[in-house]
Image (cartoon, rainbow, N blue to C red; front, side, top):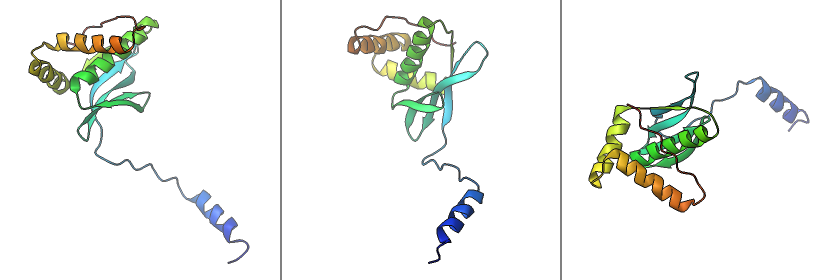
Length: 138
């Protein structure tokens, strides 16, 4: 091995373009967005590989197999941001709302009742959290 081998290899690597990060699994299918006052998406929920993924700041923040839980998480983000003085608008797709509605109906509740129950469970796990319930998108 030559004394310059490492230097040549390092120089060659610098010239090569960066390889993109390969993600495993299917592409993320967007189903809900959190939009600020300028209609800039700051987060949302997508469906990938049988899971609902909560995405905030381009990073997956949480995952769930429940559409209703995904909506509840989005509503919580809206409420937290609202308390901080930042208005967000939640837009959800019909398939997400329909899936969440089916989950609620299976429990004998309306979607609003089910989301309120999920929020109550969250509050019980975190007793110091204030109660704010934003409305669903229409």
